[in-house]
Image (cartoon, rainbow, N blue to C red; front, side):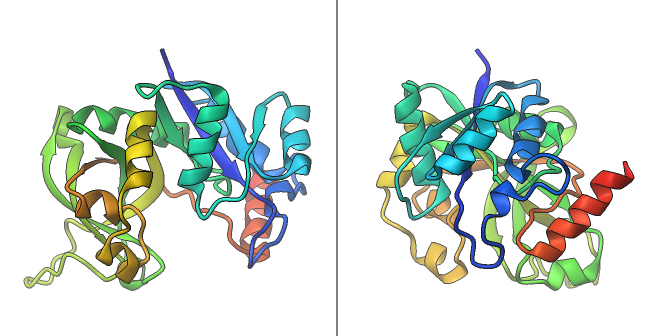
Length: 250
């Protein structure tokens, strides 16, 4: 049985209101995400979880499924309601795919699913990508991942030791190896997601403003697959216009 990709999408956005329905390419932004997710071999079903009837209608008009959810503090809790509406059992694998990443590679989604196989008990699979330049490494808006030893074929999978906005790890020799940015995608079972939502928010989670640290602070494993990935999320109208230009140039 394949995984379920659930895409949280809402109309509210501080820097780009209504971005989920921006459609200068001929279809809404969130539909591009649906199309990418449906191209992943690990995915059996793609569902958008939204609080907007307008988003629901747009998604369904392009042949994808959507479920209505209430107000939520974050995408993870929205996924939990969507999983309940869909009647997914605690052992069902789901993938949290961000609704503002229209260029996410299907292979990234597959890698997140594969990474979960190296997590014992409750935990999550995710993806990291090598950092190639110093500016990205120093940018606090780019989340860095500190990884343990490699596992699996070619050592592609690593237990995550920490996530931070700081440039880490520090290499005293001046080298640039072991630098990875976190790609914001998560795979977990429905049961693990419920357990996460029942955990007390962590101190480091609040300090760094990184919700994935809650897993680590509660002793749960995160396994990261190392994948070369260049896709970026859309947070501003300027980023969206750049995406439209790239789309039209294809």
